[in-house]
Image (cartoon, rainbow, N blue to C red; front, side, top):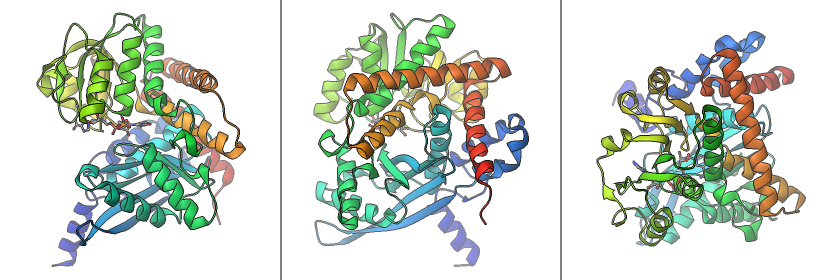
Amino acid sequence: MTANTALETASARLGGLSYLNPAAPEPWASFVEQIERVRPYLGSLERWIETLKRPKRTLIVDVPIERDDGTVAHFEGYRVQHSLSRGPGKGGIRFHPDVTLNEVMALAGWMTIKNAAVGLPFGGAKGGIRVDPSSVSKGELQRITRRFTSEIGVIIGPDRDIPAPDVGTNAMTMAVMMDTFSMNRGSTATGVVTGKPIALGGSLGRHEATGRGVYITAREAGRHIGLPIEGARVVVQGFGNVGGIGARLFHEAGARVIAIADHSATLVNEAGIDIPAALEHVAANGGLAGFAGAAQLDIEEFWQLECEFLVPAALEGQISAERAAGIRAKVVVEGANGPTTPAADDILRERGVLVVPDVLANAGGVTVSYFEWVQDFSSFFWTEDEINTRLERIMTGAFNAIWKVAEEKGVPLRTAAFIIACLRVLEARAERGLYP
Ligand code: NAD
């Protein structure tokens, strides 16, 4: 094998040519392009823009485990700290067969922007393991989680970098991570992860927080353009933590959720889907396939359904330029991270579709994660009402601040959110100065 072929093989494994190459495939390229779009608005802080276009710290780890049949299997894991300028790293851990370094870098970058846009005192980080959790046993998954936590233990910690759940991980994953970190340290460190079970220092309201934030920002967007939630038609892709809870809150507020999709099925019912029944079906069967309350639909037709609110809440890159051209929603509320490519973003804008960007729309989760981390530090826990009231205040405050900048500068909400966030991060960067 020549050096070049070896390099190409290695970079293919890492999800594309990559590391700092802006021409690399999405999603890191999407993130870099989004940063470039705010360059004209940075004033004297522009001299620091390159710091946003390269992650501060990237850790690639080998995760070997003994399988139940006695063989040894290896998985590849990552923890990327995109920026620590404003505080410790913060961002989820993804378990998915398509996880790549390129994707984790982008997700970490979006966390930097999200935390700064909403005003949380965190930098941005993200992690993941390339594994299909459904292809390993419960015991194997626990060994993967423990070994991964030990490997990234050199850079995480309650005041260094605080993981949380993401696609394919949940409160139980966080419990195992917390326990592993604590065992290695020799004392219980509840604040090392958020999204934990309540019994281990988790926060009330955390499980629902991202879906609730999606709902709040959709409602605020509707309020600004005269589109009430009640009676609105809603289409949701992804029916997990974010999409499932978001759909339920729309449903409870009197909206008509006419289509939902997950990895197993794409379903439509123009009369409105019984969301509680669909949630029960997923809890019992692991997916929407077989749910009787709606008809199967082609995925491309799904994206073209006429509706008021379209909520992508599965994975990134779902709204491509081709799909954007056919979208007939009035508002796209990005529950997922990075669901709309930059080219699609432009098309939606030209077509008059309002996009509530991920860094705002799905910030409810990290906001309540912040509450959880604060509660863990003080060992004093708030009521669910207190959590939801504070969440509501932060989300509506952030929405209105971003809306105002968008109006003043005549830019989309995403650019406005990036402007606010980049100015905050780069101001911190400039104030701290360069070491040494
Ligand atoms: P989840 O694992 O709970 O649910 C993911 C959902 O997407 C599932 O319903 C799954 O079936 C579906 N899905 C997966 N692949 C699909 C495909 N190819 N087509 C259609 N559906 C597919 O994950 P989640 O926590 O709900 O996360 C969803 C998105 O929201 C991700 O982009 C994540 O980064 C983002 N997000 C999550 C949180 C959080 O607190 N959980 C916070 C902010 C952002």
